[in-house]
Length: 256
Image (cartoon, rainbow, N blue to C red; front, side, top):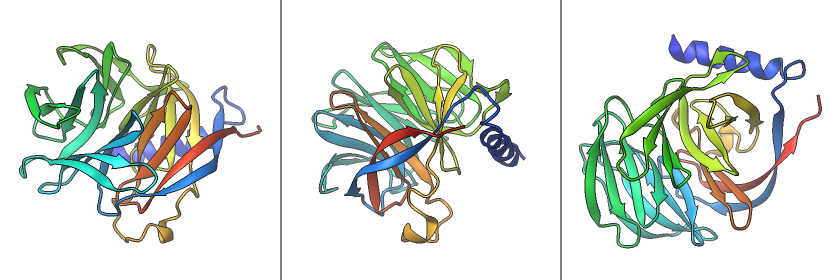
């Protein structure tokens, strides 16, 4: 019922956008790049000219360093087969990654991918992003956990709402220009969130970016998931689980 409520609430929010204060954005595709169609994308970020990606599924979970233009995986570290990898982000020279239901996170050296430490948390791990000072962690609910970026200890939580309505199924996260972007699981929509208040300040509607019949799989899991921001060049990248393509997009405000 939670998924159904979330989808209906989101559809209603977008349908009433013309009357609401929350702006809606479409997109223009600037560039298209190859993406490993076997990658069950859970986390994505851009660092020093490369994409870094965390993938999920038991026995297939990994962290990867990927060439943008070719989609080639140039470095990879598999996670233990018993865990289901989730979101990941980089703080300093460390790559921090979550797992879905194991209630354990991993800290790797960003350069060597050598495991440095583990940390624990209660509940599920979904998406992860950071602004250097704080980590922002989603767990599939309408809440974002804010963690200390050094200790990974939870400091507080914010609830994500749109016009007062809680938005559930928050998934992969990215900090973009001071805002928090979140994939809404199972939809073609990204929420732009004020990371202090939790209020949705914009919707990004990516319907039609990669139609289902072009995803190369009939898997129902092949949904939009993966946001990376190149702050230096102001480039926004998005992809999906098991998608054969990754896109650089530019946001376009939709007229009311």
